Length: 168
Image (cartoon, rainbow, N blue to C red):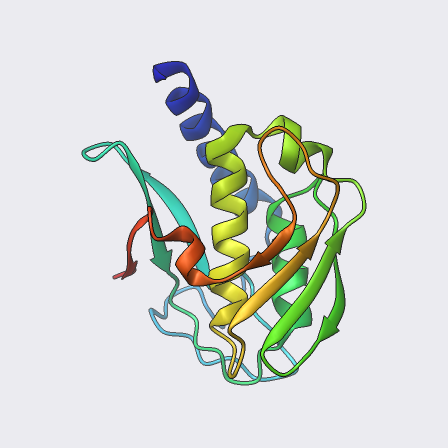
């Protein structure tokens, strides 16, 4: 169990470090704590991220600082693809209350991240998409693997995660 926790922490840390070095810093969001997003600018990070809590040895959903004015499903797909290289997410349909996405090659998600890593990805995607107005569910299509399975996901599917907290 400790090995799985260590691997998850390493993956999260690696992802965080890589995103800081790969992303371009701009004046728009370098000092603000709540960024208002124009529809032409999109978002730079998922609306929710999952962090490991050493005290509880569990995962926490953390709401980011950005507001969602003008943000759509395509923006969420873009930032998820940026954060999780190797998991190419494609938008299939943005219906009224359910967003449909697919992953053609889900090997990294379903085989390479472990159960906690896969759960973190699916939770971030689901919570970020369901933050959009009117969206209640995300239909994620990919080939099932050892650590993740396709299906329709809602926030209720991640009730075992500690309640989402707003990042301060």
